[in-house]
Length: 84
Image (cartoon, rainbow, N blue to C red):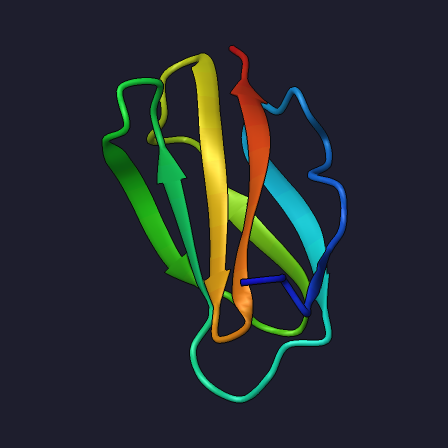
């Protein structure tokens, strides 16, 4: 299914304490953000909203993660690098 919402760049990336990104064009309904580690395990999930979203990363170890933004109109994936 094509994604009909727009996800901006994750910034900063690499990140230490938190990461932010902008969401535009969300339809009605819930949009979820899920962070997965390199083994495919969910290490955090959040509800997204239109505009700037900020996620705290203090619970994550330094590593590479996949950020999935799942909405009614599709899924977008971004790569996140957490540093010390």
